[in-house]
Image (cartoon, rainbow over all chains, first blue to last red; front, side, top):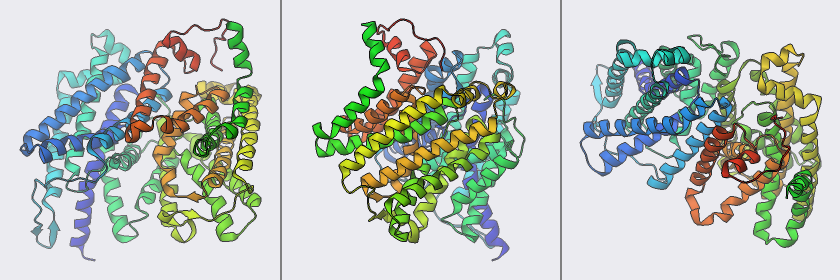
Length: 295
Length: 321
């Protein structure tokens, strides 16, 4: 086992981990803005992947326009979901447990919608990044690994600028911190929360688009990714931007290494085991989140 | 009219039980199987009623406990060769034990943290069943175990009798000191602790009771199907059990039983929808949650009737207990 192979595994794990960390980030953003935990995040990712399949794989549009259209369509869906379902429930102070059950229902709904529209057979489209292996020294890498890391890095920097540097982003964070005070300052809470949902759905869609070269699309793939993303967000610290990112990457790398060195069948058990240990001994995650609040 | 409603409400459980007892004589063999599955699910859902409805701890790993009960029964009979009754007792005991263990994370975690833990537990159990092939049969499934009673019909009567006793017990637990403690936990944990409720004990009992019923339901499942496969214990199954609890009103024992049987038999009624069945389910649940909870703030059937504009009897209690 040379260092090059180890590095290669870590890089592959990194690409997978980034795929996990985007829905994890979405969960974190929604949690901050509304105190809701969205179980449907993984299935929104699947839906994004399938929209991309229709636009790029079936309709034959070029890659970049179909990427942008997918993200836009998913963003609109997220906005609509929030305005039609989540905000009215929040406004009427419905028990968070009930809203949580609602997101579970959403997850089942989207999964079956995908199943009815696109069918159960695993589908894939042409890898836009090329499928020839790159060789750098002793390293053998698929080009999509580098592209995924680069695209997500750009996305995250833009997102960070949007949340910290613009007026809308500041308003969104204000709603997350003190809803009543921000409402009195003239911020429209319903719009800001809808915007948060839009943002997190769009991020999940990016993940769904990028995942295709790594694993083929199936209607139920969102389930296992959602579980990993939830593990990532809890390991990293719920509500923390860097926590979601770091948690996702940690889960991706850990499962790749575990699969390579120990056993690939018990890979998922290992991740859940780590998650349970984290929840028991450090429930706040790496970046401590307040566990008992907002519940 | 009002009197009729009151009378119906008072004897609802008895009426449902009588209907269930009459079921084998009026249904075809296939319909009877569906009713059997409905009754078996109802036992499991009553357990979830204690956990989710009374104590407000959401679980999405309940199918895993069902699997534990069913597989323990199957393995003990096929591989060890025990008597079915002893196997059933051990299966229920083991499931209760494991389920009580699940209460440990619940001491410290609430809300989504707890739900994700239960999801993780569900996945762990499913993966273990899938991969421990020498013991569980893996993806091929497990078959060839004996039934508790020789005839399917007698198993069914046993199940209905068990359901009746459990329904009464769950109802009485809801009104007892323990039930009130659980409900206070749901409303406000800190306040409950201040009032002298032993929070840990209450949570543990809640998990133990619900696991016990899940184990029992699993044993009956093994009896009904005669074949176990990991596919029947996925996260989607857990979600549909959750659906049954929610549609039953989350508080009412009779509601939970009726909703389990109705939702179990819906696939047969809605056969023309074929693969979009779950799509319709989840949509109905979403509309139900959205309309019912936003307009009335209540999750009961009464709330839904109010939403839909049906007249209601007077003198309905205001509190949610």
